[in-house]
Image (cartoon, rainbow, N blue to C red; front, top):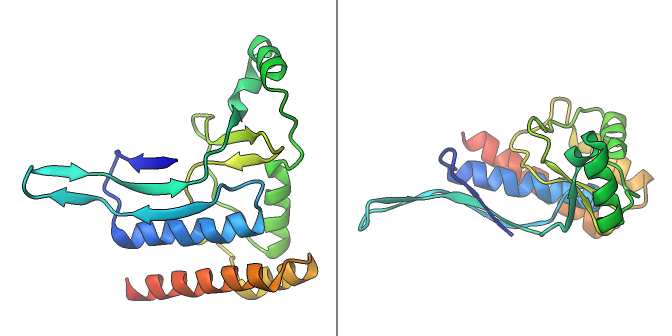
Length: 171
């Protein structure tokens, strides 16, 4: 899916931050965050005097949004039509993040930022663009080791964190 940001300009450092944050969280919680394959900054097309929006390229999540549950008839129809059962609820992510010492900054003001995927995951489909308060890479790595993540997954998270730290230091 190409997800464009039309509401405001997406600067190159912000695009990089979004990419690396989602790389970390989709590695930690593969059934709760779609994989991001790339992110790109807004650009100005001087010849045509156009602003081209920035955005991300990410995994498409087929499923149903969380806010359907608020309307009983719609919930019943969606359950019948979709038959998606949540095996990996987002509440688990929030609990595990607390175990690692931080609160995840997720936003669901309009009710469409969570999608129940066909694989049983409850996915957060908006973007995270800043470090959660209390995020410490050492605690995250300890968590990953204790929960049986592969060395490759640990390396992806560590490298993404290092790149994020480098971007933050440049600002």
